[in-house]
Image 1 (cartoon, rainbow, N blue to C red):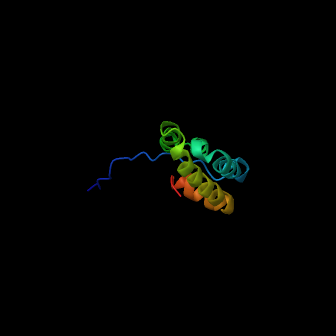
Image 2 (tube, rainbow, N blue to C red; image 1 turned 90 degrees about the vertical axis):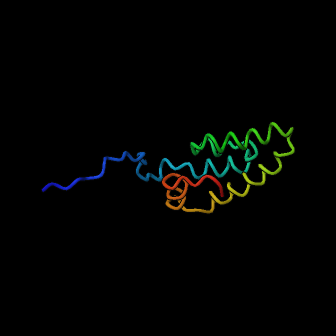
Length: 99
């Protein structure tokens, strides 16, 4: 009697951890300097989240940019205070998009 196996489920591939190609410092600096524009989100590959930050900043004539700037500053500091492994696990493997 043969066992029925569940259908093959394709998981998106996550590149193996390589500290030489980490984007942690770049994302941290971009979050601090250009956080209101969401550039750090685009660098991480979070296009939707980056667009939200960019559009809030632009469509509110800069009023929402102060809020997005604070969010970017906080995220930039969080990126820079994590180790390379923690950053990779949270933002590349688990795809944590906010804080």
